[in-house]
Amino acid sequence: MTPTSPGIAGYNPWLATVLLLLGNFMNLIDVSIVNVALPSIRDNLNATAAQIEWVSAAYVLAFAAGLLPFGRFGDKFGRKRLFLWGVALFTLASALCGFALSMPMLIWSRALQGIGGAMMVPQVMAIMHVMFPPEQKARAFALAGVVASLGAVTGPLLGGALIIGDIWGLDWRPIFLVNLPVGIFVIAAGLRWIPALSSDSRMRIDWIGIAIFSLAVIMVVLPVIEGALLGWPWWCVAMLAAAVPLGALFVWRQVRLARRGRGQLLPVALMRNGGYLSGVAMVMLHFSAIPGMFLVLAIYLQTGFGLDPLHSGMATAPFPLGIMLGSYVTGRFGTRAMSRRMAVGVAIMLAGMAYLRHLTGHPPQPFGVMSLAAPLAICGLGMGLTISPLFQTVLQSVPGRDAGAGSGAMQAFQQVGAAIGIAVVSSLFFVRLNGQGGGDYTGAMSHALIYQLGVFSAILAILAWRGILRGRA
View 1 (cartoon, one colour):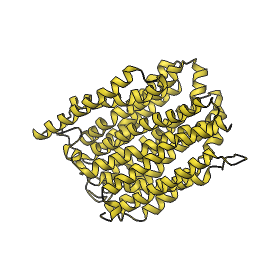
View 2: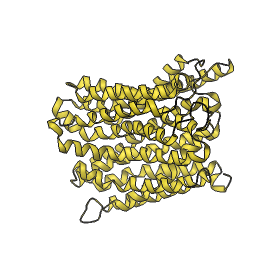
View 3: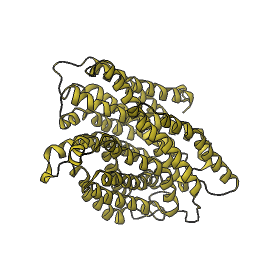
View 4: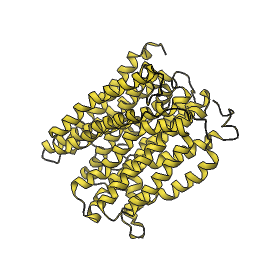
């Protein structure tokens, strides 16, 4: 299906993409903006440590568990409809968060936000995958990569500015209320400018599969979030162990449905597609490295060197600038040499991380906002070169009717990877920090970045396994 196909004729795909990515951007910054506000929320609502933890955990759990099911719902009920419903629910939940009078209300509202995010996010890639012809997908996915990375960096910067500004004496509440005008605009404009793509209304929904998949994701994400902070109690280990048979049960059920000619939550054809699976593995690894890095980097900059949240966000600005440059360059190549572009981008990120590890371990004096600009810009450049061909590689083998499921599964594993990465990187950071008496932030940062070096080396190994580095792609 192309922009001139029935259902898309008369629509500007680029205008539709801007609206889709604007909706997605709300979700992206919301994940990181909350971290900056947690101290203010704790003081304002007299929260316990466990409640503060659940402000983030409730969102992540609901979001990760809902991505694949809602991706499939988009295939059946219409992706435009699910996207706009998701934006509406996310916007309503943001208002509830902003006006929350207690911690339980805030936590449940955050879970509702996660459900809204899970409704809209899979539809973004699915609509773009179907809406653009092959020669334009590279630029579209490059733009998506820019937005994804900007969200991770913009959250702390915007959150710091809003909290320091204390708009109308609302303290932390504007970090949620800022979503209201954006959400209303996306809904109003989306009704007119996002095309209503064809859907498969006859598709049967695998409700049992949804329950198994969601439970399996929770069994992984919840202990990963809680385990390191609680010292890995037995129930965390038991939940991780239980995720393995649940995952096997999910796969068995999908295979059984395929043999009976019934619709699957995650099409078996995709699970048997080596290119799709290895691509999803690279997405999970890639996005496990970045959120964890920015989490400990914020602690390093703010607690270790005394930067306030606003200046800490400014210090990371070279990263999205590098992404913009890399995305512009990779977008010019279209569908050419996607595999080699991924390899080059990952290699640049590996070099940038090695440079960042050296510089954070041996910080320049005096230390300022621009002290880490060079390695962060290099890392951003590598990520910008990688994201577009990576997304294209994963989705190019997904047929249009399964675009929602393929996109939802990819982003579900992306979220699982992010949760695992945050847990591992923060554990590496705090184990070293606490082991040195609580003051060795340079050593802790160097220790934490070992994970990033290992991840990007692993991605290069996957690329080599696929034959990319030997010139077969």
